[in-house]
Amino acid sequence: MLRKIIADRKIEYSSYTLVYAAAVLAAKAHLDYVTAVLLMAEAMFLFIWNFRKTKNLVDMRGLFTLAWVGGEGIACLKLSRLQSDWSNVTWLTFFLIYVCFNLGYDLWLGRFSKEQRQEVKRDEISAKRILICIFGLMAASIACFTLEAVVVGYIPLFNSAPHAYSYFHIKGIHYFTVSCVLVPSLSVVYCLMMARRGRGLVRYKGFWLAVICDIVAVMIPLLCVSRFQLILAVGMAVFTYISMTGSFSLVYVGVLFVALIPAYVALTVLRSHSVEYLNGIFEMKNSHMLIFITQPYMYIANNYDNFNCMAAELKHFSFGLKGLFPLWALTGLKFIFPSLADFPLFVTKEELTTVTLFYDAFYDFGVVGMVFFGGLLGGVCYLLGRFRRKLTCPAGHVIYAQIAMYMMLSFFTTWFSNPTTWFYLIVSGIVYVYVNS
Image (cartoon, rainbow, N blue to C red; front, side):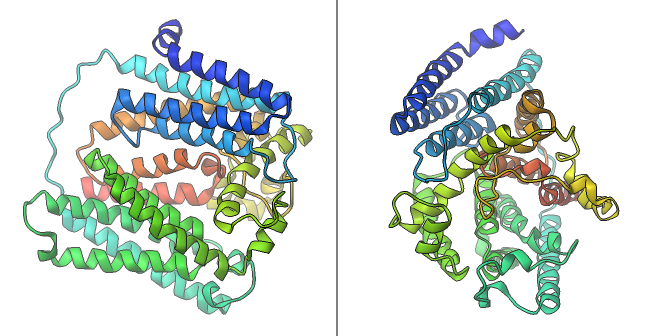
């Protein structure tokens, strides 16, 4: 089967291997811009090639490839003095991540490719239950946000401290506060379900309730000055829409992009992060770099360098303890046994703590752990894509959209070692079971 998979994907694997080898040679020759262009162009080529096969804009293989390989290319621009040459282990690991993910994906694809595909008739879904979930999540989020504001004594938006949001937490409660990011996605499900009835959406009282909840769901990240929660809420809603309809107008993409830029910049300013502060923290070679370039660049490029730093400095593997942090956090075991969560973070600079999706996999078991995790992730993504095609309950698209967002932001953090990620998935699973019961 492995030989057949490689034969079927020979164009992608051959192209990726040749371009990656050329990029490594260019990097060794310190031709940073050449390295960056090669990898970014290859990421776009692989994404387009995959889209031509699947006709799916939110196919997880395509999203992961675009984000991971493209993110490598952006990192290779070396616009910061913090960045250094990557070690051979880092280059090899980054190469294997793409290969293992695709092999894991294709192994499951080969297993199910011979099954006779049948159309599954959709059962009648109660839109009222979706609406109840929207309102319930929003009410819980508002209540917990209010409780945190009262206990902590301030709202981050109105506090001038640079890291006000970092201290705006009550253990166990904040998970419910930020659960509002699921509301826009559920609203998309509700609205599309109502639209299929052939009547104008504005005639439904539930539509206006969903709109109000969406406004509040966006306001909470703004009040928390959390750029990440805002992007996650909007991105998941977009991916849910694409997953359900199969398309998304480029005009909508442009409108959302234009709308998010000023909001993103405004939140940066409100967090007391000036252009000089950010360029100084990231040690940009051009100290006058524009903030809307510095901000996203530092959240992509430095993550790869943090991985390189960890690969070079790590002396002992954690053998699964670091990757299981969500279990220690959600069960409270980390408070009983602090050593379960006591692992040093290897980064280029203390303030820059974001890492890639595969940071903890390497931290646990080195290259072996990364190979296993990459293959497992590829297989899971295939199964989720198959699950989406057979969905009879539209609420399942919210689960797919979450994982798709994590693939799109694979360069950002260790999503599956984050307890908040699993909290979102648990809540989404409960919603799915409730609506589908």
